[in-house]
Length: 289
Image 1 (cartoon, one colour):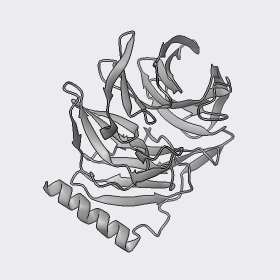
Image 2 (tube, helix red, strand yellow):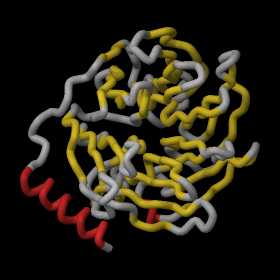
Image 3 (cartoon, one colour):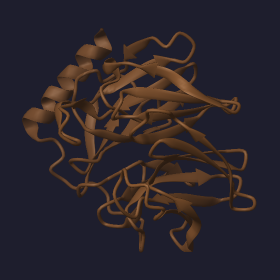
Image 4 (cartoon, helix red, strand yellow):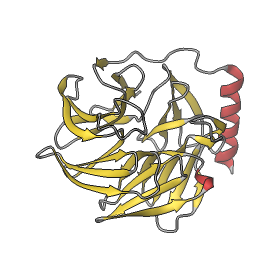
């Protein structure tokens, strides 16, 4: 409850003062040439970044989507590294396998040979979005349009939780026995419009019980979500172009004021925040203080 009150107070201060009139730090590097980049993931054992490109409508099965391969210092290795996708969004990586959320299926790619290893259909899914992988290799995927979290366990993809209480689940992060969920907000049924913005919740990975996490007051249309290494989080707000920090005690700070389209962020080498700017066709890297 104290964390809740501190989060409320911090948010009230943020809203009343317009906290982050400054744009924040300048990017360390910017790489252009993408086609609606939505997500980025760092494959540490390969020392490369993978970037998803929607390259069309977000729900169109047009075969235009692709994955790019980028060096950690912001150089394009291969723009069209993997084709044959539709509208790829969230990415996850573990043990040489790249997991891709592609509208209504989870695509698994062997990065060693650059070929699709398997496709797992999520029956009834409309907008698979973020991907997170736990230490045992289980894969979690959000579908913000149907208020559903899917889980791949071995070769079986099934519903972990379907509930309106998820409020447009988007960003996912595995944290101990919890799955941290960043919600887009309560969808009105008119596209991505919300009647209330999103916040952070924690989903118990054993009991599937939801609980508020640090910042339970609606404050952003959350897209990407990462741990800050200090017990808190960094998250992106696609609709407003903001990047927030949420401390371990619930304080919410507007850290980066960017353009609309700041999508599914990741932490890269040397503690760099990687931000795909979907509407700018760019990937940017920022130093995290």
